Every structure is written in structure tokens, then in C-alpha cells.
Image (tube, rainbow, N blue to C red; front, side):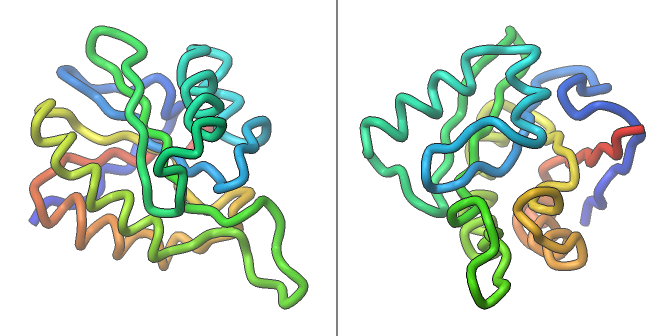
Length: 157
């Protein structure tokens, strides 16, 4: 089975040849404006525009759904709804929804294989969403890696 390739650098600037899908986690309330999305918006306007349109349309805008937006000839952004709201609830439960992240990644497999693309990401779900990498990593292993999708995780320096 493939393993995750850990790299130092910026996930919005993938360091490989060929087609690339950059993935990140979005919330289910249409909010875009903090965290990794800011780095995406700095480089490309389209992912935010499409996410907001998707939210307004209400069509399939649910936890576990994905939206893929092409931003360059060989780069796509995947908006994954894997976070419920934006702050921990009164019981201290973080916004991350691991089941939703797993659903998103399962949907991404076909897209990645069709495009023959590698998948690039920061440590998704571990910033504002409040998730733990020890929970996310096994999800990546049993979805993308198990299906032979090449995965790169970037630690920003």
C-alpha cells in the first residue's frame, strides 16, 4: 500500500508533476474566510466563488459532499464539507466530522483516478476544525492510499 508523502512547504504550491487535486475542509454553513482557505483565495478566486454559489443553491450542500473546481490546466481544488459549523459546541465537541471527511475522501477516489491526479493537502481538519491528525491519517490510509492514490501532506514552514 502507498504511504503518505510528507513535505515541507505550501500545499497551494504542489511540488509534483502531472495532475494535482488540492483538498481542504469546508464547513456546512457557507462560511469561507479563515485558515487554509485564505491561502487558496490568495492564489485563485474560483474555489471560493463556486463554494458560495453551491451554498446558495442548497443543492447537495451537506456534510460528506465534495465540489471540484479546476483552477489551472493541471490543478483542481476540492472543497470538502467535513466540518459542522465553525466553533466547538457547548459540550466542547470540535467542528470536525470524521465520518464526513471519510465520505468526502471516498468520493474523491474516483475523481483522482479519472484525472490520474495526486492529492495534496495541509494537515486537513487539524486547524480551525479542531481535529486530530491521529484520527485523520488512518482515514486517508483506508480511502485514498488503499485505492492507490498518491498523497502529499504539506507542513507549512
